[in-house]
Image (cartoon, rainbow, N blue to C red):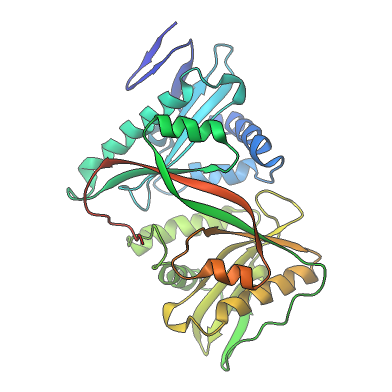
Length: 338
């Protein structure tokens, strides 16, 4: 049976519709299937998924599509993120393994492409428009689906890991640099400002209205149950915040692993060992709390030399992702590239 939907055709009796906030429970169950398939475990909670759905300005009816099997089970979704860069949206799509190769994945990609084109009217007329996503290294079916639908990949993202069997080295900072926790600072706007400046050189960065971006950041910080401000380490040069290591006691993929969510140093203070010192300080505090494994995420070809730093402090790559993109309109690249 062929079921028709605007911009989408499925070769089976599936139902596809917009998401509603009441769908979060079934969405969470499918995300757990996805994580079990890819990573064997997960610590993500329903409340953390809900953070995306309730982000200021995020329209779930417009940006999420759910696919249901004939028996009513949710078996696929596509979620669209374009808040910071509407000309380079990120697409998160998944189809339950029991329901693949029936047209669901292709239909969801076609919907995401149509949704991306809706942004043409709101972005600069000369802007290059590119859909992007990423796929775990072992997920060959997803790679095949994307490539059949015109996506290409030439970059990777990686997860780094350190496993500590002894106390990590003491941090070494330049004279005049001190480390405090966020509890001693208590200025979220300044943390966000420094993070924004520190990541200005990173691939994908785009300048946007500070208050709009800060509202999203504040939303996540205020509502994420894993936030622990005593693990937010700030490098201070006198009274000036110059570097940041924001850590969490529980990683997204392992309840026994800590995670470095953000690590950044202002450009004019790089090359002095501050980032290395922040990592050693972070590892030391996590180790003191009994957390001997710590991970973080990185661009496989990071423009600021971060990959070399992570190897230098004893971390190794334990997971790889392939970044895929599909150009829908040629033009000027508004986000930071190589």
